[in-house]
Length: 394
Ligand code: C2E
Ligand code: CMP
Ligand code: CA
Ligand code: CA
Image (spheres, rainbow, N blue to C red):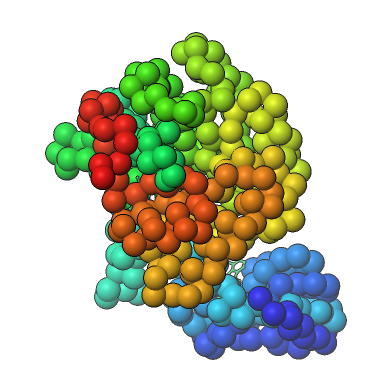
């Protein structure tokens, strides 16, 4: 964000007047600021702001003139919040929160107009339309997802994971699919973000554990190889952070009589930034015998220091690197370094998104042990998965 700019305002100085255009907001670091309106030749005080309070944000958020005037009532020190700093945050907020913000600002503006004795003009174009639509879509999707969970419309699809040397299926990744009545099979790209932003992910995550564990014995007896068949299952940050995570994982596993060494929990690197409790939970999972993979490695904010501290067992190379390996020397070097790094840390490596024989060859030559991708198979339902050849066709 860069160094924040600060300004000093003397007592009684006007900071800005209503009706002016605004290009920044302010945070009061010290001193007091009066927000007021001009009615005829009189000043109507609205609020006194003190340390830690923000003002001048409205004009930036709704691109309208300043809704009130502000004056320092004592000497003030203000931190300037630029338009970009503020709008970056507003735009990344949940659409419903953005809608609520706009509604509250509309109310405040019309309240101020009433105090001034001015009738609020009806806007010719409803400025809320786009944002209302987004919020409405979002609420609709949330409701449909909640109903779909109640109606049991989510199932795991399975994508085989191969040992690239022996070319045998040694496990699979469980990937959620929404089987709708009217729109066919919906991919998680459409709904995962909404689920992760709400508590729906907790219910969906638990359901995926139950269904995948239930399917595991059939897969495991179908695909016998030199290695124990492993089920890889994605665990979202919110699910991992919930207090009951380990206890419900253990309960589900024990109820289905699954061996923890057959379960590989896939976590994204985002959880590594969460603090020391992460390490504790990971260690607890490892002590109980689960395997732990780091998913999408290299696409987020991974710190090598964290990586070295965590008791992880497998590093998944993201599809974005695999798909660009041939045309981009940078991506190739990243893949190479990830293979070296995982060896140094005593972790196995799994490459995602293998689509071509050339990619497979490069990865095998680099010493990648495990892989998955459309070259072998897309994620498929259990019945189809059980019919697969246990070896890659020559
Ligand atoms: P991910 O964990 O990185 O999963 C790999 C994604 O890459 C899957 O997408 C898979 O279908 C896709 N993929 C695999 N091989 C290829 C390939 O060769 N080419 C291409 N183009 N794609 C390939 P999917 O199933 O749509 O899942 C997307 C993401 O949604 C997953 O990314 C994961 O982050 C999340 N997700 C899926 N199922 C679950 C779940 O049960 N729980 C949680 N928390 N997240 C899930
Ligand atoms: P802005 O419209 O950019 O400039 C004036 C600021 O005063 C406004 O942002 C809010 O931060 C603040 N403000 C406006 N109306 C009120 C009110 N009724 N009560 C408190 N603060 C207000
Ligand atoms: Ca994954
Ligand atoms: Ca990935």
